[in-house]
Image: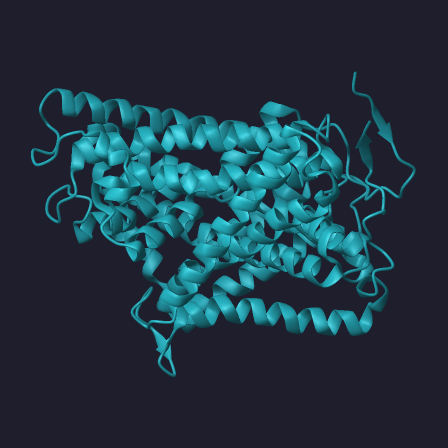
Length: 505
C-alpha cells in the first residue's frame, strides 16, 4: 500500500488539491489547442508528406509518448512545479537545469504571442461572418488594430490566470467542451459527405496512409515530424500544476498520458476525414491549394458544415483563446520555481495572498509575450512567421533535456527491475534521442534561407538565427544571473538531495 508523506520543506505557496485527473487533462488538451493546431498545420504537413498525414501524426506521437513517460517517472519521484528546470538541475546541475527552464519559458512566450495573433485573426473573421461585413475580416491586417486587440486578449488571459485555478477551470471546461463538440461535428459531417459521394474523387483510403516509410524523403519526414511535434506540444502543463493537483505524485503523469492518447485519436480521425473529403490536390478543396493550406478549417467549414460553418470559426477562436489562457500557467510556475530556488530574483517567487497564484511571474510572462508580439508585428510579418517556425527547436531542446535528465537521475536503479528498464531508461532515452535528431536536422535545414519564410541574414536562414539566437540569449541571461545570484549556480540551493514537497513511500 502506498502512502504519501509531507516533507518539512518550505512550500512555494501554491494552493494544493485544486485539480483532479479530469481537470488536469482538460488543461493539457486546452494548451495543445487541437482545433487551432490542426487548422494551421494540416495544409503544410500534407504539402510535405501527402497522404501519409496519419503516419506522420503517429510518428510524432511516439517521441511525445516516450518523453511523457519520462516526465511521469520524474514527477513520481520529484513532484515540483519547476518540472524541466528542477529535474534537470537535480540530474545535471544548475547550468543545464537553468537552460532547461529557459527553453520552456522561451517556447511558451513564443506560443503565447502566436496564439494571441491567431485569436485576433479569427475574432475579426467571426465578426465578419456574423455581420456579413467582409471588411471587418480585413481589420486584422491593420497593424495598430491588430496589436491593440492582441494586447487586450493577452491582458484578459493573464488576468484570468492571475485570479487562480478555479477561474481557469471554469473557463477551460466551457471553451474546450465547445471546441471538441464542433470538431466532432466536422469529422462526422465530413465522413457523411464522403459516404454520399461528395468527397474527393481522386483519392481512396488505404492502409499505406499509416506507413511512414512511404514518405518520399528524410527531409520531408523530419519537416513533417517537426510540424507534428508542434501539434502535440503543451501536454506537460499537466505536470507543471503538480503542486496544485490531488495525488501530486501520480495524477499529473497519468493526466499527461491520457492527454497525448486522446490527442492522437482526435488527430487521426480528423486527418482521415479531411483527406477523404478534400484530397491532396492544389485546386478546389484540395489541401495543397494555396487558398486552403494556411487555414484548412476556414476553407473547408462551408463545404463540410454548410450554414453551421460559423461554428467552426468560433471553435478555432475558442481553441486559441483557451490555449492562450492555459499556456500562461507553465511559464508562470517555472518562473516561480526559479525564484523559489534563487535561480532568479526572489520576487519571482511571490504568491498573491488572495488567489494563491504566482502573480508577479504571471504578469512578467504576459508582459514579455505582449512585448514580443508587438515588436515582431511591427518589424516584419516574416520575422513573426520565422519565429514560430523556430518554436520546434525550442520544444525539442527542453523536452530532450528533460528526457535525458530522467535517465541520468535514475541511473543507479535503471536495471534493478523490468519496469525501471523500460520506463526510466529505454522510453526516455529513445524519446530524448528522437528530440535530439529532430533538433539537429531542423537546425541543418533551417540554415538554408529557403526554410520558413525565405528570409535570411548574411546568407543564413532566419529560422536558424532566431532558434539558435534564443538559446544563446538564454546563456547570456544565465551568465548575468549567475553573477548576481551565485549560490544557486554553486549548487548550494537545488541539489539531488533537496527534498520535494511530497514524496511517495
